[in-house]
Image (cartoon, rainbow, N blue to C red; front, side):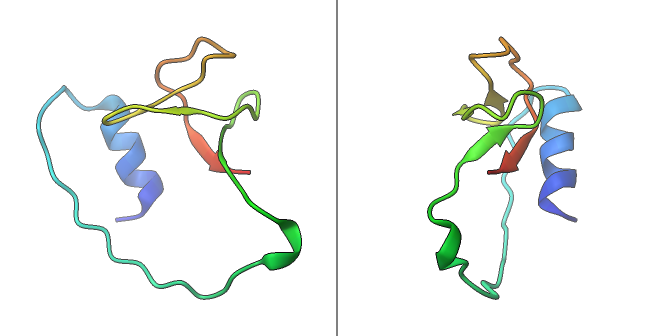
Length: 69
């Protein structure tokens, strides 16, 4: 299951307590582009990270979908 699929599940499933174990492998570091942030896919502003979702204060979207920016 991908991170995107987990994010979509969290946004659409009925509220519940659930734990995820995510195993990842770092395959490279892009030093030339500097730091990145989790941004809104709608407006690209930085997202507020909630317990099980993301909120975009700029869009007033409490179910924002995240993208690395």
